[in-house]
Length: 296
Image 1: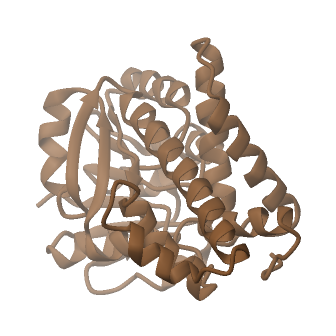
Image 2: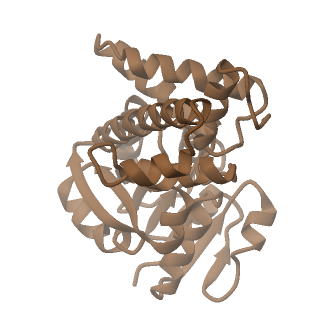
């Protein structure tokens, strides 16, 4: 088995690493937060001193970071992956970032003889824990074929969607659908509540019909229980929609619904709710109905 480097041990990354370790792979882990590394080191997981150090000790490096600037710093910056990389290294960036940034990083990797895949994920913390993420990959098919068995340890759906950048384009499409679904669900449940109909009864009545969806099944119970513990944070979804809108602008594509939900997310971040689960979009709708039950 190849030794794997893993950089980024946040809500998602720490569980993804553990699933690789459960399968018997040896790993070298690094995060800018030392306590996050402390939590995973041991039993086949070694401590990395830096991104450069991780790259120098492994054959495949996986990054799982918040956004493009963090990925650029980890790969291209001082003590970054490319400083420690050897020819033949494979870098799999599983962060959700701009496809344009993915392509720029891939170009820099190519000059060092490093193969690059963008492979963002969907499913949040629950699916990261049980290894059933949806993984959308962009890059060379030969490289994809090499790492697909590893990705299948973290996801139940692993699909090569096209060239480098295509993975993140697919993820942006996913995030548009999820955000608009949550916003629509929020409007529906608030309307039911204001009309004196139990939102839980409404949820149970509609989930088996055309309005039913994975998003509805996952997020309506959280709204009903007032449980906004983050599986996917509002501030990260706001970042994803920003990347979607910037990408759309570069292609002269209008995304009116995405723009509207993006404004909701910005308002929630500004009021201090950015670290709540994105199901807390409902609190924006409640505020507009003048009966918010949760303040960020």
